[in-house]
Length: 348
Ligand code: SF4
Image 1: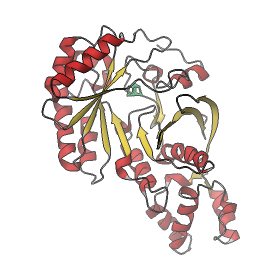
Image 2 (image 1 turned 90 degrees about the horizontal axis):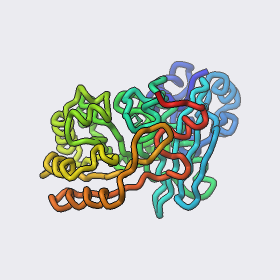
Image 3 (image 1 turned 60 degrees about the horizontal axis):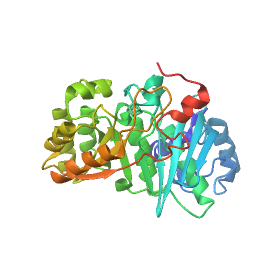
Image 4 (image 1 turned 180 degrees about the vertical axis):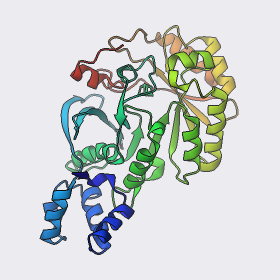
C-alpha cells in the first residue's frame, strides 16, 4: 500500500489523471489529508463512494502509530515515539511556548553523523525517512492541537537524523507542509538544522525558499570538530562558513550556529575567543546549549559559571548569543533518548 502523504499536489494530479479522474480531485484529497487532517478516505464526503473505496485500497494516510509518549506539563513538552509502517520507530516532540507550538521532527531513523555526545548518533543509521514520514510527524501533533483549538506554528528539523543527507524527502515534506492547500505553514517558520553538509547548504540556497538555517558547529577548530562530529571531517569550518554566507546572501536569513557546551571539551575561554573570531562580521546568532547528560555518554554539563563566561566572551566581541537549556531533560527529550530507553539500545 502506498503512503498518500508521500505525494505532492502535482503528483496527486498526475495520479488522478492516470485513473481518468478530473484534476480537481487532487486538491480535494490534498485538503482532506493536509488541512482537515483526516486519515480515513470514507470521511472525504465530496468524493464519489467508489473513488473513496479505490483510494482506501491503494493508499494509507499517515501510517504510523504512537508508541511511548512522555510529557512534561511544566516545560510544555511532549515527546512521542512513532512506530512506522515497517516497525521502525522515530521521535517527534511538541514544544508549547507562549504563542508558539513547535514540532521537532526526525528526518532519518538513527543518524549517520555519529556525534560523540548524541544518543541517536551512537545508535547508528537505519534508513532515510520518506517525505510522508517526515510530514506525518507534524500532522500527528496538528491533529492533537486541532482538538484543542490550536495549530502548529513552527517546525524545526532537529530530531533524529541529518536533514541535508536526506535532502529530497526533507524539501518535499517542507513544501507540502508549506502548501496553501494544506497547513500552509510559512517558509520562515521552518528551521533546518544541519551539522554543516556543505553541498546541501549550497543547494538549499538555490531553492528560492526562505527557510531558517541552523548549523551545529560545536567546536571552533577543525580537529576538535572532527572528534565531536565525525561525519563533518570532509567539510572544514571555513567551507561551512562560506556556504552559510552564500545562504545568507541568497535568502537574507540570519544563520544560527548551535554549540553544545561540554565540560572540559569545548568550553574554554580560548574556544570562546576562537568562535568569536570565526563569526565576527557575519549575520549570525549563536545558541549555546549546555550538554544534556544521557546514560552511557562520557560527557558532563559545564558549571553555570563557565557557561556564563563563554557567553560573555562572545557578547564582548559583538556576537549575538542565547543560552538554551535543552527542553525536556526530565522527559528524556534529548536527541534519541526516548527511542534508546524504549528499545533498550545501548551506546557503542
Ligand atoms: S546530534 Fe543530530 S547530527 Fe549528531 S548524531 Fe545526533 S541526530 Fe545526528
